[in-house]
Length: 74
Image 1: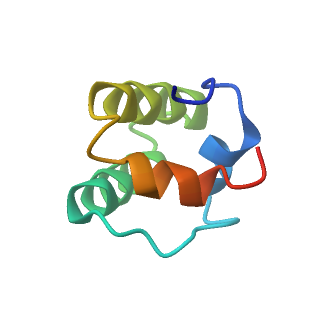
Image 2 (image 1 turned 45 degrees about the horizontal axis):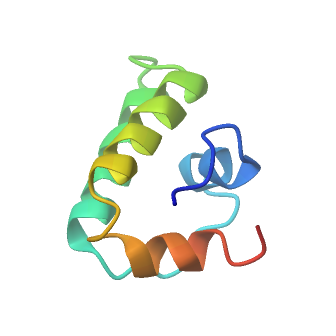
C-alpha cells in the first residue's frame, strides 16, 4: 500500500531535502517535471505532492522498490 499523501517524505522529495538514489527513470522524470513546475510557480508544493502521490498510486508495482527507499523509516 502506498503511504498517505500527507507524509513529509513526499514534500521532501519535491524540495530536494532528502532524495534517495531512485531506480526508475520514469519516476525521476516525473519528479524533475514537478520540481520545475514548482520552481516556475506553475504549481504549488501541495498540488505537486497530490500529483506525485496519484502518479505513484497508479504505478505502485512499478515503483515498489523506489517507494520502499523513500519511505524506509515511515
